[in-house]
Length: 116
Image 1: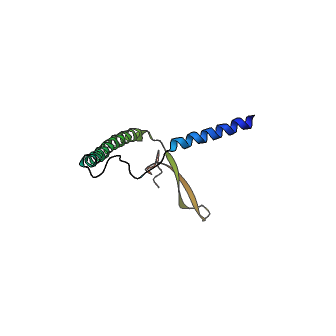
Image 2 (image 1 turned 30 degrees about the vertical axis):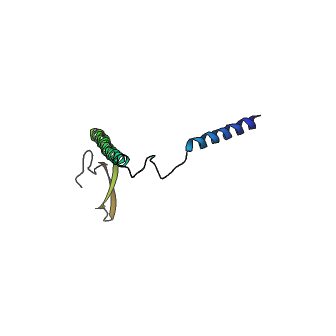
Image 3 (image 1 turned 135 degrees about the vertical axis):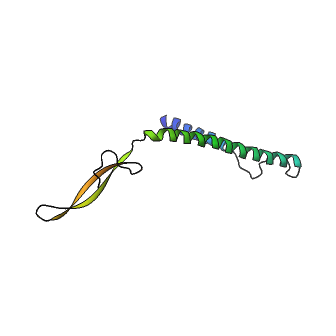
């Protein structure tokens, strides 16, 4: 009984999905493209759609930029940069000594620097 219910659910779901897909065609108009009314209407519609889309895009971009700019001062992302410098020990050996420097996202040192 469970198999029948599952099978009928899959078949009905697939049938419903096929009914929603529809058919595609290259001709998107129902009127003749040789009459001036539909041609002008499509040209005006395309222009209005392009201008409206760009206006909305500018508004969204402006909003996203304002939010990113407002959040930037509060960004506390940091990383550690390791630099090596050479030192000579008291017994005359030369060794490489690591110096870890905490930097912000722009690469500027954070905190007290040792001047190296």
